[in-house]
Image (tube, rainbow, N blue to C red; front, side, top):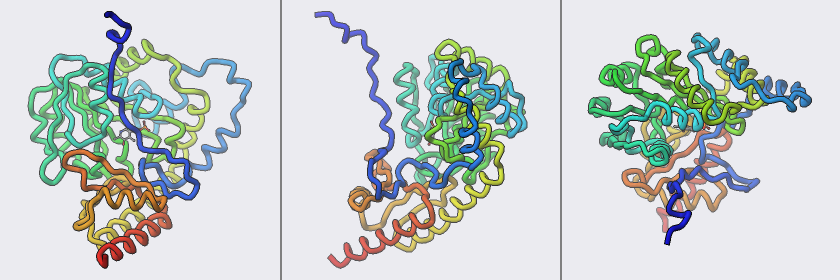
Length: 356
Ligand SMILES: *Cc1c(COP(=O)(O)O)cnc(C)c1O
């Protein structure tokens, strides 16, 4: 029998990290920033005139676009904004990955890429990370319909150098290369300087991590004027009013407070350094991270066991039950105090476990 069900677009959705309703928790599972956004953001929101909410927001999001363009020394016509970088990336997949050849991305990476590709029926090939769980640039020389990778990669936290990114661009002149820089502010090289040389490069960023604004949903892309025009054509064919009035003010206010931004980044970096040292002392193996999380594996205790034990103790980290990474924990860098509690718990737990 025929049914409406035959015509459903079926997808296996992306599974976001949990947002548990637990007042006592230490939340280290979704790479949020432990510090609040700039006080200027709060001020901008306080100063909003609610009467203006009667009107539609500016469809060009000019206030935010121009703040971002100035910040990166780009033209306004080189900046596209969206509802978090997830929205920007989805638009970019729809816009640029419209060929017959498969797009390429790492086998271990942000788990939304294959979901968008499936949703939009884009063919893809997952390129395995090397033995060290790092991206090997030489593997991106094969024919493709586009390339996307995060830098630093997630959930591994390691980064490519600018020269390595240049290598990938140099061997992919004919398709779109997207660098997802969700974590770049925490200590990796940005691909932005390469925009001058490659008109097929799109750099995607977010306010969710380094700017402590995951709840506001702001993401953006920087690219050639032509690429941004293509993105906007797709956006205006889908939803023209993506950025609401609150977001435009709050986003511009965050960009305006560079001192606060740098201060927050420094705190996260210092705590990351401390956490890495402590975890190694406790028998974990981990690479130096360039992001606001670490990706660690313990020599004796399985990751899943640790994940469960931490959870029982109201400490939430991320565990991926996937081939090659099912013995790792991804732990977001919280405040120094939170990380001290994590380390104390792990130390006690591992010691007791040894005595058992
Ligand atoms: C967090 C994250 C995003 C999405 O962030 P938004 O909150 O949608 O801006 C995109 N890519 C990677 C690799 C991420 O980790």
